[in-house]
Image 1 (cartoon, rainbow, N blue to C red):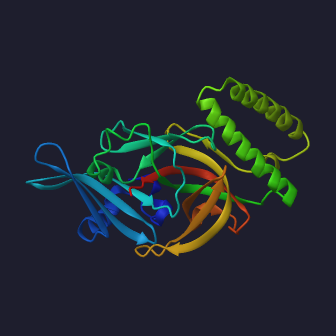
Image 2: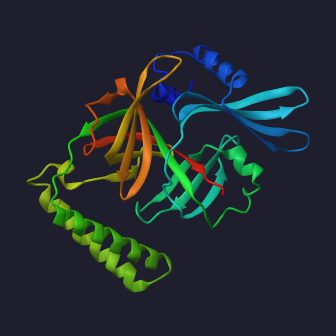
Image 3: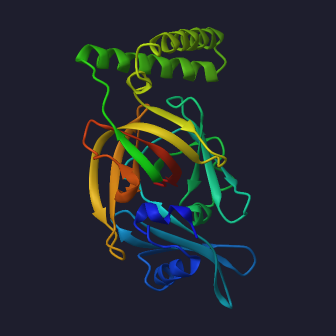
Length: 291
């Protein structure tokens, strides 16, 4: 059974057989369906059923003369805002049934790898072989099975303004460094050394989470799982219509990126409020947006 089903309100499921009921519902009573031409005389199909606003279950597989053959399913949350518009590439995952997206966003400092939600739509748009190296708009979102709420870092208006200028400058340097600018590379190296020295000095007298405002870093063995600390810009509590379990949808700002994360209320330690921070591990998903 998919371990992230609990994030969208199926926290009481214990067996694969218990999940089958909802997979059958998705097949027979879907909210949306997408079909694309497959190999030979087959078609690829994805069906999505919504169990709470902007979140639900997607099942996918092949359609031929003998009917539909389900090959995979996964829970998903659909983000509400564009997260990145960088150069994007797609690669088939090891299971051969789903796809991963990757982009280098200078705001994070690492390659963002995410599970593609709308693979069949991508195939229908006939871009799987042409998307590499193109700038594409992507809406990222995350599912979390454990998290906690942190208090915000106290800042005055001068510190906030200084941080915004520093972030903009770093983005410009990263862009220049990607194009081979040696001065930019040297400046970034010196900046990172100074940052490491500052953090090492402050850790003797301060708590780590008062130094690190937000973070976005890989964790675990899967390439699309990350540990995040993000500022809560908005939040809402929604209910799974099938199980009546409550889910928090957190609209986060992290390293100047904006994305949505959902977590089962029972898995969240603390009470979310605008201005506070969320810390937790997420499974990063993404929807590639087409005009």
